[in-house]
Length: 491
Ligand SMILES: [Zn+2]
Image (tube, rainbow, N blue to C red; front, side, top):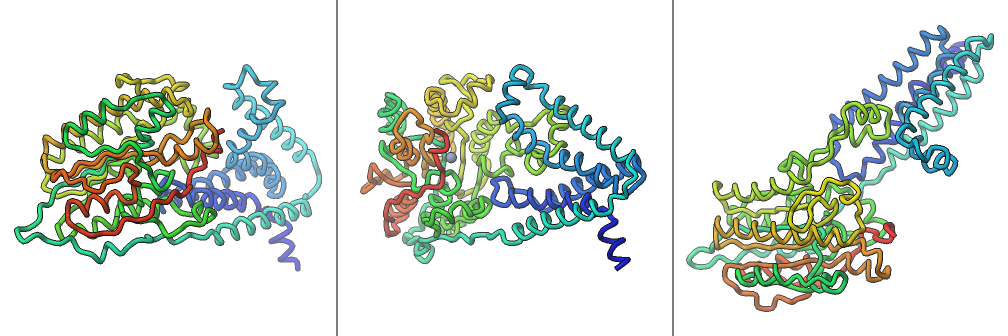
């Protein structure tokens, strides 16, 4: 009993438990995240949080020279240190804070720190003067934080990862029929312009006639659709479906939110087409915003994902500034990468994915850079979107020119991955529908576009392309629309 009392009642365990509560909570949040957080990122994060929390406790111990009092004193700064931005975001949403600090919003961090210092000093003096041993108070805190820890641990362990797979794999059994003289193996370019809607809707919602680019492409021998659609209204789902010529096995709305983005990226990088094309010794070239490997400017700093709730992030933001992804560079690098393929030995399946015309709106219609953040992140502004789309057309022409210079006999597919999902001035129904509209233009060196419907959906893209170019007889899948993005949240 005595040992129990010493170990449990009379020792402040909670300053060493709180960091683990925070770490588990954060790791649970990033579980479904888009950013690929590596094992070593997680270990480093856990170590940094644990030791900085310990340091806070030891500073309190040096100040008070009593372990129980130090434990109580350390709770306040430890919680502030770990959950700084949770507290900050809560505070700035309060009406009273908004009224009080309307004009000094940039100084709000200093005010919070000042408040924290005042509370800390008051508690310090109260504890220092007190003759209490705080054994039982200490025990209560141990029990409370142990319970929190148990809840957090349980939630972390019970995170369930949904296994995703493809629904339509029958094509992987059907080989490409080899011609007697040997089949041509052209490079296949799948070029995505994020959120590029279709021509019919550009006319309907923007009053914009997109004939300049359509005419340009048709003159080069492309088939251009006016009523194209995607099957998912979210990027990674849509691309995974297109590049695998298959739906994903999950249809239940609740389950779709449990899909891990990294699993979708895996489906994209190990797509079914590549498996089918391996007999013709194709390799994959990926130049995409979702693949930071090939586009280094896109790499978010580690501190900006795992640490973003902590006080460390504030320090980093104030001292070093926040490193934002350099979209301008990303997009020009993609074009450069495509150009550089002329020096490489193919054949390749090239997946190039530009970030525009999707927001941030970084270009005006002539391609002049926009740096005013108010414009860049006015995300529902469809006029800025249209301007960026006009510039996208310019880039599209350059890319097509480059590819034709490399090899006139390439297959080229130019598509949006979903529509403009933020048509807030239209009805909810129209807004939702527009989320699936995509630009779609295809170039086959044999010019055989027989049977290509104007309403082709993206999951069938490669089924039509392979049937008409490689003489496969793959079935055309039913056109479905599956909601993975919630436009109503932006109303
Ligand atoms: Zn997208």
